[in-house]
Length: 472
Image 1 (cartoon, one colour):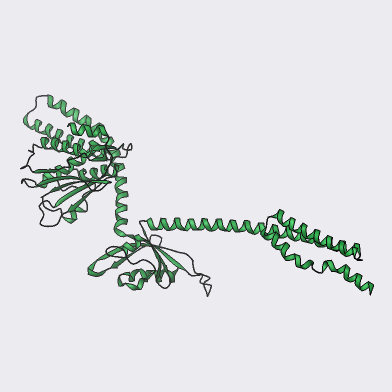
Image 2: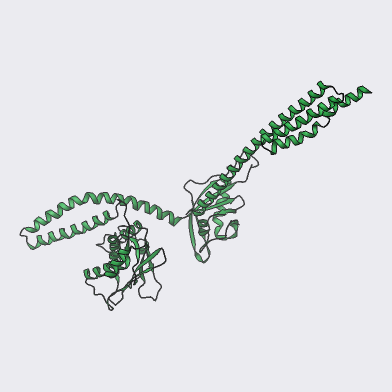
């Protein structure tokens, strides 16, 4: 009987040791390591005290104290392992959160880049469903405005049938020509648009597999064929411009020698036939000089240094100088009608280059306009807070469409003795200062239908510029 009581007493401290495992484990996971170790130490001391009490009541000291020590050591081990595991999981969570944030930022960046791309982007699945479409693609899929936002089906409109057929063919063949394919979309009212389409695949299907591991998408890049042709033409023009500039530079020296030799011949006594020949040489030398100067004007060189000029004062002065040069009277009955703002208007441009643009536009207008008052109308006005608009309109015959498309290309002229560089130089000079020039045919019934308009960036004039304008 006494032995059974002693055995019960000796086993008593370890009967509830398992109850402390969960608190120790939770302390190691949820609390700092020092506090978790303090918790384990407190439980170990409690077990030792319980074992000591059992010894006092007749228990075996060696067995009870050994059991209590081993249990306390086990709690310390559990605490350290739980704390290390919790710390590692916390670090992994921070790394995962950082990776998730980077992925989210990258997705936002990709979305912004795709939204701002000039090329249209369509993401199409195997069922012909458009999963994503940027604004450029939606504009190409509609006659006016934007098509519906994604998702939508390519079967929804008959005009999109070529895209659907091409996408199905691409999925079946698993490839697409590197240079792209030209697809023509036919809209209502006889409107059509030709697109240059390039495609890439998010997953290439393995013909050896019967089932795909994931869904396959076709990413289509759409571009209006007219834009492609315009870009290629601009690249060719840029290359031609560099070549022309080099040739013009080489022409200057022999041209100067010809002009000097012709001038020396004119100093001698010549008969009428020889005088006529030397005059022809002089006239053609001057024409070649103007051509060389025009080519060198738009040749690549030093970057322009734009400044803020008072467009009201400068254009008024330029018009007066031009009228005196061409012997044109200004006034109410003049062929040239001016509409300038009453206040100074600051624009970003160079005064001499603006004069070159304006004189070219006025010369073209005078050449084709009638002799009636107001046949040439020049208007300058602030369009909004960031831009100003200069227009030169004339009442001449409307420019034919087959001529209009080549207006701003170099070496294109409707005159036999024209260089064809005037409007091209105007366009190049405008682009140097962030401006733009274009032609617009005004509606029938208006007097001045041929209109060229130059859109310039506005700038803030200094007080000295305003005082000079008021003084003049």
